[in-house]
Amino acid sequence: MHNSWTSPTSRWQNALVNSVRLAERSIVVPAHSVLNASKAERELKIMVMCYDEILGKIQEIVSEALGIDPEEATADARLTEDLGAESLDYLDMAFHLEKAFGITIDSNELLLTNILPNVQFVREGRITDAGMDELHRRLPDVNLNVLDQSRDPSDMVGVFTVDALARFVQAKVEQNRGQLRDTA
Picture 1: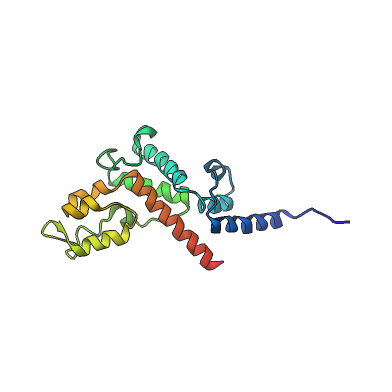
Picture 2 (picture 1 turned 90 degrees about the horizontal axis):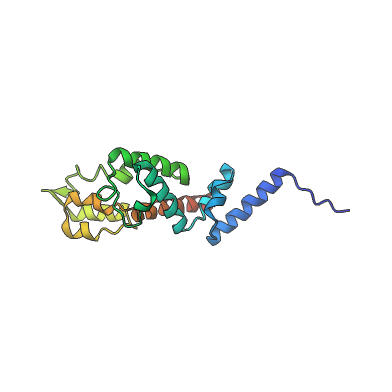
């Protein structure tokens, strides 16, 4: 007689293997299932979230951090100029993004505080070619066209939209996914 019972550990291991297989195929997992999952399941499901799900969660985080209505946190809303984010708000959002998506965000990644005082990147009140190269390297998914044309450091805050934040987080999640595959 065949016994179909499997231990909870075995079921969890099978779920883990299947989740990794899903992640490799980038299958979308509904956001509500991420919120009702254990920590291990949540980490795996985060890795297969699609852009729209990431954007939705970021809109929630931004609206909570800034005390605004969720409808105001549209994809093209600029965090500082349109929504009133200040440097402490960026740190608060970074903390919540790390927690929600299981990623690590260095304080310089969102604030870019080490760009402005660097004479290699900003000279005579203008962003240098090396500065633009560094911004493109750090923010590959962010539209820097306006900043690239003006070269005015005060325009840097305008490039941080809710969409840019979503793309930044998506890249971080993808980076974590790649690291998981490399260690598997």
